[in-house]
Amino acid sequence: MTPAHSMAAKQGCIIERRHALTDYALIYEPNPTLRETSQIVTAFDADLQELVENMVRVMHQEKGVGLAAPQLGVLRRVIVVEVAQAIEREGESIGPLPLTVLINPEIAPLGHEKIEGWEGCLSIPGYRGYVERWQHITYTAQDINGHPLQGQATGFHARIIQHEVDHLNGILYTDRTEKIETFIRSPS
Ligand SMILES: [Zn+2]
Image (cartoon, rainbow, N blue to C red):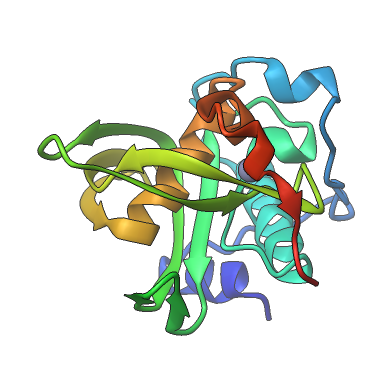
């Protein structure tokens, strides 16, 4: 059982499959698909569920904290985020963030505070950059069944969501920093 399965089960939405699960694969910069704008999701169907399951699988395989559908070459407005356990990062204590699936997410800053921090991207392996983001955000979205949901996020959680929503608009974190010299090989 993947978290996507268990989540779908909780929401009473396991759908019988008539075809094999498509295996989407991660795409990398400079693949031009990463620069396109993703389309609004209007069908909350088995295809969407399959896409989300693939996104969660890849995020877990790659040990990421977020993934956007265009990173699998699918231009639809879907992101998944998850911080599996609490971590310490640049002096910030980051609490766990349960697996969250946001369809058609819209974000807005809450207040004016911005903060810089390190980011990496599964589509730009081996690098990270120092990027300024809103410290507090609110978001609205739909869940995998199309039901509206809303929430707030702060700090690293807000950073992940902003990074992933950027992917839906063809924006990479490398577009948001002039500190090109701060790009370094990530310690692995
Ligand atoms: Zn990314």
